[in-house]
Every structure is written in structure tokens, then in C-alpha cells.
Length: 390
Figure 1 (tube, rainbow, N blue to C red):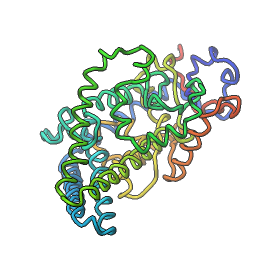
Figure 2 (cartoon, rainbow, N blue to C red):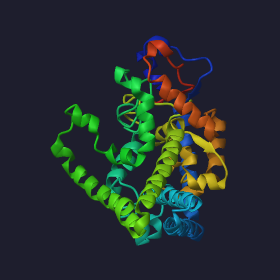
Figure 3 (cartoon, rainbow, N blue to C red):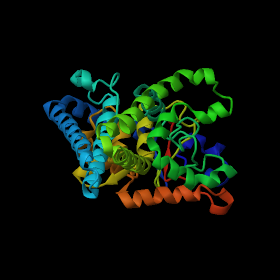
């Protein structure tokens, strides 16, 4: 649903012309206070970065490499089902750690302060088919700048799904659940194609000349990944080629389903708000912060769960501070939650099955035209985006 600004309320028609009685109204001054408090929280964490954070990321890298070596080694015993399953599991964990707690976070610049070549956000490459430079544009810039702005944030539906009522319904969306399932199974390929904006190429908004360099980058990166996972490593196991090939497919599938689920839980469960381009046209830093909080959701779990999610289980904190080391999000979360409670803001959090269940419910609901499902009530938070004259 849309986060509405008071200054735009008179322009909205129907039920949105009426401020719900139970809505939280944030004044311009409150929003700026929130911004200052979050800036102060950020400054405290930045000042405290040091050896603890170095040790953490290197321990994760060591674990990731250990799981990969174990998985590759166990494939030589893949003719025995228990060893094959163990190999798939170890490789799956390795790929999840590489993509989420290492790759995603390193490429956000979370460890640039260490000045270590292997952890430099501008040159880091990860174990997936999507070229890192293209991901940094589609994710770091497009998504984190225009988070949940319908028409600007292409992560709302990834160009193929209807994930918000602000997206006009079309019969094509009847296939919403099918497209979502396919995206989940092939998630690394969907991420690879994201920056291509294929739907805009089809509509003529982008020419093939525009996307030629992207296609060349995709071909090089995907080619190396396919060669590694589906030719070289299977060939190294000799007569177990097919068994190893299937194991590598299984490991990639485990990673795809897990990353899709974590990311969708952080962006699309019930209660997450979206926004219009008009109301966010001249945002202050405080308003940007509030948009991140209203447009994100957390997933509750233990320490291992948070590590395996790349700490994207703290999606609210990640959207507020995308370039701070993600291992700091658990200690920041109580302070962010307290700030939300202080100002009456919702802090969208819940268990994994609750969040993913609401995501899939939304996927099925938005497959249907609005007249069959009804419209979602107006948002519970209304932001005053213009300073009241004295």
C-alpha cells in the first residue's frame, strides 16, 4: 500500500481523501528528528568499527571455503546417497554464504574501510551468474535509492510480477504464482537479467544497442559459472560426472530458493508500504529514512539463521544502513525498534513462516483484478513532507 504525504492528501480520490482515524501522522519536525537520531546511531557504529568486524568477516570466509572444499570432496563419494546429500548440503551452504553474508555485503561497500583488495566492493566478484558490476547498479543504486517507489524501484515485481496494487492489473498477471515459482527456482538467472530491463526492451523503451554491453557481460560471467559448475567440477570426478552435475544443480537450487525466500520476506509481506514518485520527489534525509523503515520487514530467528540470511533478516536496518557491516545489524535493531515505538511507527517483524506466508498470499491475491479482491486500506503512517509555516 502507499505511504501518503499530508501535502498530497487533497489530490487523492476516493477513500484516500480521508485520513484514517487510527493512522499515525508524523510531522515534518518529527521526521527530521528521526533522521538525526539515525545519523547519530550510524556515527556511533562507524566509530566503533575495528578488529571485531575484521575477525567476523574472515571467519565467515573461512567457513564458506571450508564448506565448499567439503562439498567438492564429498562428491567423489556421490555414488552413496548419504554422501551425495551431504555434498549438496555443504555446497548449498557455501553458495549461500558466498552470495549473502559475503558477496552481497562486500559489494555494498560494508568492508571498504578495511582496505583489503579481496574485500573491495568495486572489484569483488561472487559465485553466481550475475556480473557484480551490473548487480551493483540494479541493486545498490536503483533499489536502495528508490526503495518501494512504484515506477522507479524495479525490485517491486522484478519486471515480471505484480507485487503492489499500484501496478495496474493486466490479464498477464493471472500467471503471478507461476512466474513467482519460476523466479524462485531460477533466482540467480533472474537476478542476472534484472539490469537488462527486458520488459522495457520489448516495449521499445530500451534498444538492443543500449543493452549490448550488458549482454556481453552476462555471457562472459554466466559462461564461466556454467563451465565451472556443470563441466569442470563434474569432469574432475570422472565416472561420477552425472552424479556430480546433478549435485551442483541441487546446490544452486538450494541457494536460489533460500535467497529468493529471504529477499521476498524482507520486501513484500503484509504491512510493507510503497510510495509514489510525486510524494518522494524532494525528500529530505529524514524522509528517506522513514521510507526505508516503512518499506522493509524483518524476520525473527537465531544467530545462525541471521548469518545464513546475510543478516538480511534485519532488512529494516539494512535499508537504513546498507554500507555498514551487516553483523552490526542485530545490535542496532533494538535501538531502531525503540525509535519506531517512540514515534508510533510500525516495526514490521515476524517469524519466517509468517512472513513468507503473507508474501505468497499477496502473490496469489494480486494475480486477480482488484474488483475481485477489494482494495487495501490506506496506510497506517502518514508523513507530513512540507514544513508547516510558522
